[in-house]
Image (cartoon, rainbow, N blue to C red; front, side):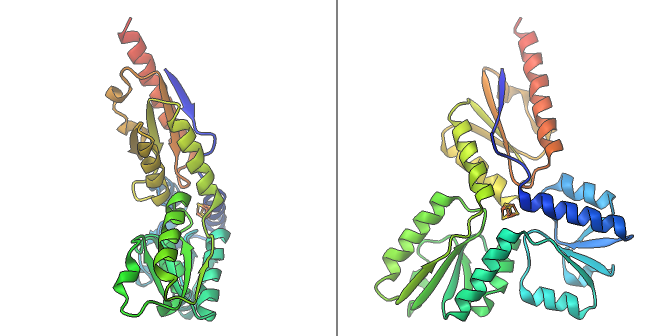
Length: 290
Ligand code: SF4
């Protein structure tokens, strides 16, 4: 059995940067808390915890004097609240996410309502919406304009950085079709992250070459889920797993070519463990068939 790795997968620049910043901060002080998980991956969270970076869910849970904002970023109200509490703030917001935050703020200043194509409960989206004040919404519903009695005149559209480019394009086209009659201006800012789209493209290419795709990453990682969805939509049998021990050897029976990809928040160790496990199962199956 051949195990083929996607040409682009795993930790992106923003996640590597955030983790290094937190590790360095943890070395310099006894305790630092991260407001939310640094990335959507339990193994990374556990490793950072052993190095002195503890995750807290809410501002009210903070007990240390130092707090880290994750790569997903936060809204300005959160930054103000942390500063008001006199906390030492380490901001690891990914620069690409920061670009979305700045775009949201600018759109509101220019009189637009801000529509973020994304999941409203995702931390990055919540943070970006924070920069739009009460002028922002997050949705993936192509018909959301039907909910307005009087459609907005100026509509600014952004994307959660990890959305699939083709899905964002389809959303923008539909909104254009529906809104142009009433709107005076529609402004689209491409806030998609190249790191993610490059991984998505590599996953799609690989999915067409194999009989089985294993997608490694946290179940609550949006970009890992997107990779799994894309592979499935290519018609290939696909499994989204967090850890190597979730692999069921029956998946590999009769397969000659197996592909592996991983989300932007998946550490190298998790990918290596999956590849090793696949190699072990492959050897076992080869032995059994002799
Ligand atoms: S996926 Fe892109 S936007 Fe998100 S943290 Fe990584 S580099 Fe930044």
